[in-house]
Length: 186
Image (tube, rainbow, N blue to C red; front, side):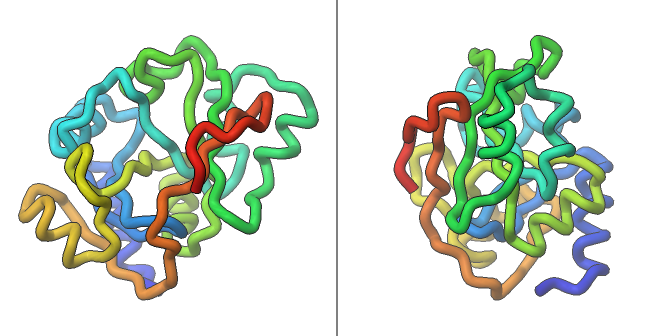
């Protein structure tokens, strides 16, 4: 796993409005502070992704994303609070105050409680969630390592974290948090 200096440096770059690439339990992701509108818009421009689509947020603990969510039934809350053995991203109703650049044209947001040690450490050091979108130009193959991230984005990112921890190299499954229906297989 990356040394803590690298994590601190990545978080410093994020707090300064930067965009980083980092490994997750699925693929390499691009991340930034979800509450920094200019950073999110820059990330979307780099990916050539439409703002209307919305973004996935990762967190190390449910309480990091809970303030953004609308009230939900206890069974739903229990289901999404604890990470599954496989990566699952949950789409849940959000509060109206959640910025458009996070939710897109939806009344919901996509969240995943990450089990990847480095990604969770980033969220812990930030004290909140992190944008987690695949490290690729929209519509192209996602990056699966630091070299493919650098090839895709050259010098346009503010920091790239390296970590040899195993990933599935497949996107996470996406489920409707209320019904449990699979929206995208993992």
